[in-house]
Figure 1 (cartoon, helix red, strand yellow):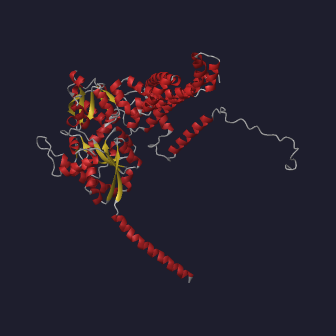
Figure 2: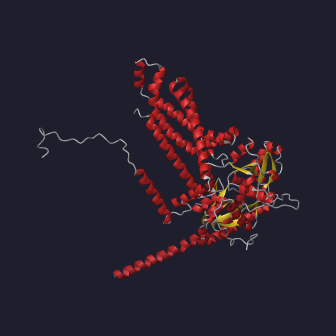
Figure 3: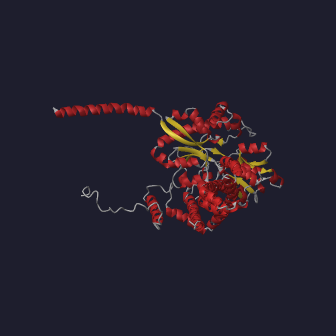
Length: 269
Length: 346
């Protein structure tokens, strides 16, 4: 039939091929996946497919968490860690923003800063712990500095490449409208770089959490990182995972806050 | 016809199988049984290194494979996971937590803190010394750096607190995880004292960074380390464990004869095999012989354990919340492989 109709056939209806590639909210999917994973995990331990010594069941992790909470030390662990993360992240981010912006905007700063950042970024912060202790002692300062150092370099790179990625045509347009330099920066460069900078914040927030454990290697009595380290040293695997759950919960909370911030700051999109 | 062909074929198969089985069994008897041992590159593991180098394991029909680890807590984990058949290392709270869940059995002794054997120093900073921290009785109220909570250092300090009857909670223990961190905190005056292994202590002393005010062995002797295996090994391969312990004890005897003899005045008397033994240790530890000679712990020549002391360790960790209440010292120690253990509780 189709070949005969060739030539003067009525226009075939074409399906719409656009669409897709757009994230649509799927509420609950993540929750279902979470619950399923935890249920399988619990079942695997209950059925003795894995020995509880190697992987404690979620229920015993929860019990360990409750034990710490009831002893009243959980809040102290969380609050001390939160303070360190907040201080370290803020210091590292502020310094990173300052350096990143100047590297993005000024050629001289870029020429000097880029090789220095490339040279210092890959240094593992744990390797510097003895030096940090010598310079800053074993109080809060060295712990905050460990986190700040870890946050600083990725922030610099995120800010600098965010500015680098602002479309040149927009800047040229601003220039042809004779906008002063200050306005180009404020109205074109800054908003244009913001998505990249915020993506950087997501990464640095996670890095701050990761470095918390290293930071609390420095003589910390309280803190989630110190709690995880102690549990690992004592081979108390249920407590260890309870600490990890705390870290994950913190990560989720910080992620949610950043999402809010993103939506608010990028509402012009 | 066909049936007889089958019969012949069957007979042929049986005969060849039997013929093959015979030499196979012989070969098994001749081929040494592979066993793996988790060790640290420390002189306290000397008996293992000596038994390996002198061929004592091979004489027992064993082919030992040494697996080197970098931290004491990794060795019991390796034995638990089956990556190593045997392990030798210091006893920590983490060890007892693994052993208490039925994963490990202590079968012989390793090193012991003994008077006259200087292995771990109580070291105080110059400032703290000037400020009155001149004896171990002055430790309460001070900050003491150590590797981790639950470590052998922690237990030594617990024994010290009992000896000088002060409350352990009156000293602030600062866990710094690694020796370099401890050295840094000590040099910077961030802690008043540390428990320092002999090499670090000598180094800090040479730099005039602090003073040694005592040694753990002189103050509080205790059963520091042990040879252990998994309950599975004991149940399923008991003869292998017996052969292993025999070879290990020969290594321990050699070690003790070379390094652990003392005269009436407490001075070191080198054994006739000293030169050979120190050469073996220097090679395995990858250190000059003089450095190795600085810190040679005491190892019982017959691998005997101070059993009561191990019970006490479990009690201490439980009382301090570092070991679970369900850990049963009685179930952790298997006394059947070595004769004549000390202080066996009834």
